[in-house]
Length: 175
Ligand SMILES: [Ca+2]
Ligand SMILES: [Ca+2]
Image (tube, rainbow, N blue to C red; front, side, top):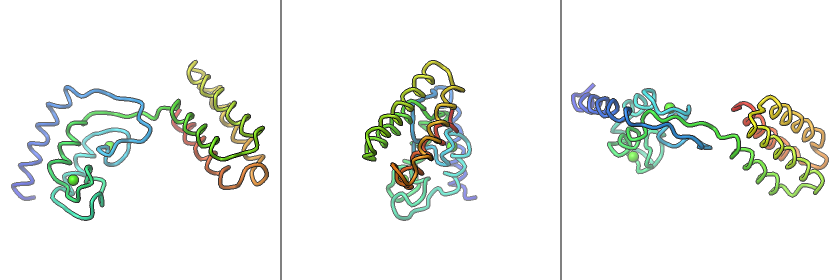
C-alpha cells in the first residue's frame, strides 16, 4: 500500500470517528442511497473498505458503486460523500412501498373489480401496519398474493401478476 493511500486512510478513519459522533439515523428511504456502497442499509466500515480498495481508479462515470457522484473517478469527493453519511442506517418504509404498489396497480389498467379489490386489500394492510398489527398485515398480503395468482393469465397478465407478487413479497420480507 502506497504512503499516499495509507495517509488518506488514516485521515479517513480520523474523520469517521469524529463524524460518527454526530451522525443521525435517518429513515423513510425506499432505496438505499448511493453512499451505502454495498447497499445493505448501513453506511459502515464495509463501505469504507470498498472505497479504499478502489480509491484513485477511474472509468466510465458511475462504472463502479464507489464512484458515488458519477464523475468517473473514485476520489476525495466520493470519500467525502461517504464520510458525511457515515454511521447512518436506512430502513425500508412499508407505507411508502405499499403506496408504490398501489400506483403500479393503477397503471396496469386491470378490470375495475379486480383493481378495486387489490387496492382495497393493500390499503387494509397499510392500515393494519399503522396499527402495529404486523401478523394481520402479513396474512392480508399473503391472501392478496393468492387472489392475484388466481387471476393470473385471466384478468391479469402473467407479467403483471409476477411483478405485483414480487413487490408484495418484498414488503413482507421487510416487515
Ligand atoms: Ca453498506
Ligand atoms: Ca467520483
